[in-house]
Image (cartoon, rainbow, N blue to C red):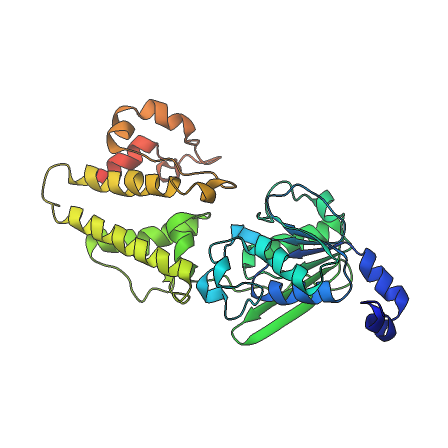
Length: 339
């Protein structure tokens, strides 16, 4: 009796063959992704690619690991493809290894990449018969939704909110898409995003307003809606970010103790924009697919601004003649910070 005998009896040999030949893209290998991957390999899908650093391309399920995520201790109670010895390793790669234990006759290639990278074009999405989302990131879910619409590829969108789960089938011109119903914009932000990898202006504003301003002037807005999210402080990665943030805060407080001394503004500037940035740049894996931040030293900004400002966009807002709409130079910004 073959492995697919029960499937053929249940759904018919023709559909089993269709499943085996299907090219399916699965995005995400976390809580939902672990369950979904297990179900796929047990349901007759033959060729699976889990996105990582491999450049091998196979037909079949293509599982993309989003945000270069790694396994934390707190994942183990619900992401059953991972075990204690897998902590700190790539979710995509370990998911591949563990899934093969369920069905060793499946071809699985793993990738440890971000679905928003430029190589994942519309034409690339067109190479699949079906896309399955297993994401917890709103921005990434919107991106995959747009790419599937552009490529005219069906999308099965899934997610969780609290104790509830949702699943929706999305087909261009036949159903509403993921963004057809407005989604509430998050009012809290993960500590790791705010502190280490801000990607939007609001991330920088929240960091300055809820963290730096409070430390410098003793007026932290603890009850502000737009604050650093600590709801997942049981997550190992978030806990480490909070610990590192506390250490940075303590170091800054020691500088603040000498606020009446000469050169105080310079020391704060160098701590925030040079020392802390250099520490972030030392985490090489973080910048494989992101542009690394540029460390700044106060003296260099003030005295060598011509060299540094060549990388800054100081073009006025189009059509603006109002002074307040002119983009400041790096030197003006640093001088205002010091004042």
